[in-house]
Length: 30
Image (tube, rainbow, N blue to C red; front, side):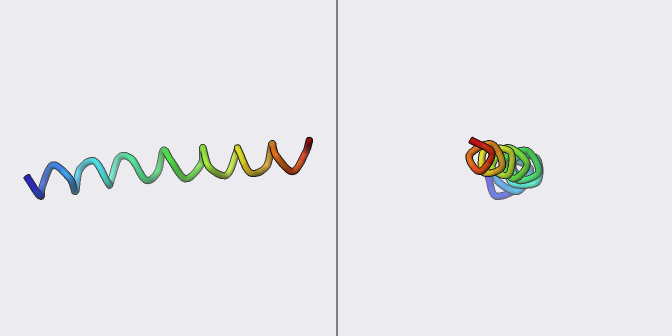
């Protein structure tokens, strides 16, 4: 099971971080 969580973390983090940054940038522009 730990290997599955590791794969999710490796795939999820690179996706979540850019999305979070985009939300922060859009919030500052408005």
